[in-house]
Image (tube, rainbow, N blue to C red):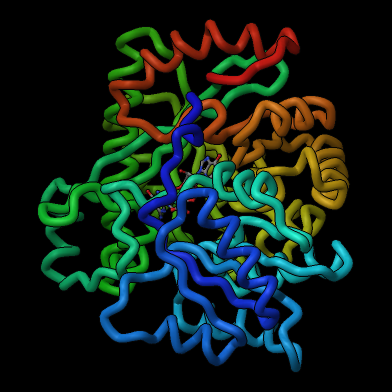
Length: 416
Ligand code: C2E
Ligand code: MG
Ligand code: MG
């Protein structure tokens, strides 16, 4: 699947923030060569924020930001972009030391911005094109880039009125290429906007107080799909995301147990994914909930590991058996020494603690092969498969079975 090829950037709205007129001009030329037609220019932070605030303007898709603006305001700008709730992707551009560039990337991510990477000056068309194409702009018809305000009635209808869809993304063993399971990822089939991604509606669902019912709907639908696969002799595990709000509820293990009983699935086929924030709320409650789930045979995974401040040794007090390495540590790691060092030491500690490791965000065969070298157990990512409706999983598995032999043989792979 070469989803990045034939990429058209004509519809993107890009902002260049740079203090130097020649640098702005150079960047403008490169964007033109890449087919970007709509470019805004700002010479400093204040001008950039003004572009962001232009009434009635289309939202920006990409900001190419020089980190080294006068008075250190490249750093201030990242904070302000985050405060504005900017959903534009960010590429940091700078001439400074690569470690400062990486720190800038970390800072932007820590502020919740979507960072595509950083580039040293002078920019080249291949460098810029590479970053643009490796991280396709997820703004297909199904992802409105504008923030949508949902009414409580809308949200209630989504959860109770059967408008939620579950997509599944496979998880594959790195050593053998075998498909071990799938992660259930919720979408909302909105009557007006079409298929919405979870980050566009989950915060609103949580604010409206429907996050728990939504979680049970997802569990129920995922288990129904699991049984359909089992009838077709497909033996998979399903991973379901459990938000922090549910971890405060001591009823969770009982409800999960009840669903497992009703659907007659083995408890070992279910893995619940929780994030660090899900356990930092109330440690005693989290321990209570997790211990009961594990005693019942359900798997527990720590999701998005590497985005917070917890270390494995701190988390190791909790009864979980899988660690999902966040995609910010994984995507592009084959070319970033620092990320490889973090991955290597995390995986080695997880192995000592007998915890399985899953790398998220595997987008290239080179990242896959690097993970194999450092002993990661499983991988999930666009390189193998995008999330897909349940009835497409069997077809994808047949396709992957052919492809994986080429991946594992080390033959050059250009395409899935
Ligand atoms: P997550 O649990 O970490 O899920 C993985 C996300 O990474 C998915 O995004 C998936 O499409 C995306 N992804 C997978 N492979 C790649 C890759 O190679 N590159 C890149 N760039 N991204 C990749 P999605 O489906 O948009 O979900 C986003 C987040 O929304 C999930 O992150 C999870 O935290 C939340 N979410 C999804 N479904 C549910 C749900 O049913 N309940 C709750 N509470 N949260 C959910
Ligand atoms: Mg997850
Ligand atoms: Mg994750």
